Image (cartoon, rainbow, N blue to C red; front, side):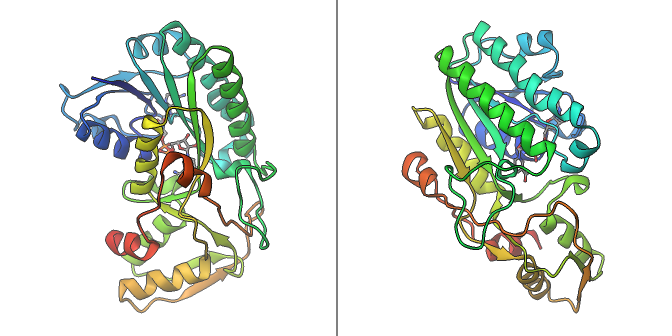
Amino acid sequence: MMNILVTGGAGFIGKHLVKSLMKNKKNVSILDNFSNSDKKLISLFKKDQIKIFEGDIRDNDDILEATKNQNIVIHLAAKISVEESIKNPTETFQINVEGTKNLLEICKKNNVEKIIVASSAAVYGEGSEKYKITEQTKLNPISPYGESKIEMEKEIIKFCSDNQINYVILRFFNIYGLGQSIEYAGVITKFLEKIRKNENLEIFGDGMQTRDFVAIEDIINSIHNAIEYTENGIFNIASGEKITIKSLAQLMILLSNKKLNIEYLKSKKGDIKYSETDIRLAKNHLNYFSKIELKDGIKKLI
Ligand code: NAD
């Protein structure tokens, strides 16, 4: 049976992933310091089915223990807040870059065969009205968070190539789904919260900014496909469809059947205007298809 360690396994993506890996009869362990997740929630998983290592990717001893006898490491642990990365870039780099370097060194020591890593659309920064973002699009991050993900990718590519470890880097776009922590939640989760409280939806700017939203279920499928994939690569993982934030708000109000309005606030500094994604590479190589349409995904959440 395949042994898989999920770093950051107690987080938003991690919990969904662990559940589905267990369904697929994998031996699952997680390594998490619970800095952005709840230990109690993950302990709801049956103890005999999942091994929990409480530890930090900045601590070599913690990683050494957790990576023993693992075939694959799925690396989700990260400092994910863009705003905090601006306030304290050092911490973001320590976790996202140095933490990943530690993890790589020790994966090598413990003969881990493959690493699958969560990167982010933040590596691209601003998109364009004229083209879709492909993996070849110039990287141009506008936050320390995005910069840290680029550094992380570079470390992975270099280390894994030098040491014959397989790697798949997945650049996730805007993910939505159950269990996203409100604090760092994306706009869909924030709108849902407003709808639940019967409050108007707030948009920063004119609402004409576009985003590519992808359901957590599609993200989980992409990770399963990455497990099966036998080569190395970097892939955009998104829905491939763009929507303006204004249309999103209108759609969500419509689906909620409530009489709510949209309020427009001053646009936020550092917010990107265009994001539209080309996912052909993941289709052709990973056999990844985005199966959940935004309307259906949101209906389910409402
Ligand atoms: P999350 O914060 O819910 O999960 C991350 C987990 O890592 C948390 O449980 C946290 O406690 C843990 N963690 C943080 N620092 C750690 C450390 N030093 N040592 C050990 N564990 C630590 O975030 P998420 O949304 O599940 O994101 C998972 C990954 O996907 C991250 O790498 C993130 O950058 C990437 N990503 C997420 C999105 C999104 O929309 N959610 C989009 C693009 C990329």
